[in-house]
Length: 272
Image 1 (cartoon, rainbow, N blue to C red):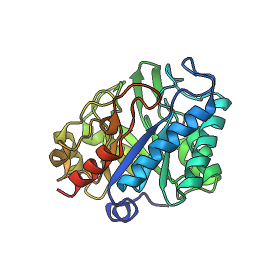
Image 2: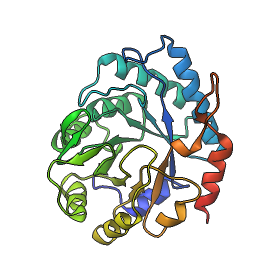
Image 3: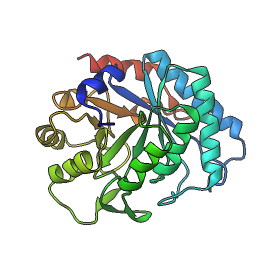
């Protein structure tokens, strides 16, 4: 299959926003609290808030399994994420759902997608090599694309980061050159541009440069999105991944849960 173009992305992702379902710590991780039902309930609550606001796409991520493995995660992580995603899709069968297995286990993400019917995966390092807090991570696009074909899930989109947050490329090249390799040689369906860290904004100038270099490639902003800064990226971005700014910072069992009010406000901002 050829990578998605901008028209295909627009048809699938309308409105052009992907809400993040950041999972609580999973079994086996240092911060695991001992009850998977709590993890499920929070994930379902976040998915409910997003869908009630009008989001048609969400992405599930083992966000609190720090410190992350640089590559393959334990089987229990895959099992727990699969169980939660099955519950989300059972409740919201029409939701476009993505999987990101941190830090870079795209084999697990594709396996989960094959088992659950999820629609896309995110790959932090798809081509090249990056220096991260987990050490050096090498992209495995050659294996990822072949595994996707072997599993019979060519329809599952690959959303790949260029200069992913919390990392630096091992050898830095012009950004447009890196992005062209990601798209033309790594066959990424979408390219994600993020800021230096979770919740920190991307550089609109980078989006402008990449739009010139890749006029038909879907470009997503992957961090720091708020209702206030959408207009900075609108001329060049095809979509937005948003999580941190949608959360309600409260105390108690629902601390840092997705707010349907903030989610609604974000989608309203996309309309200009």
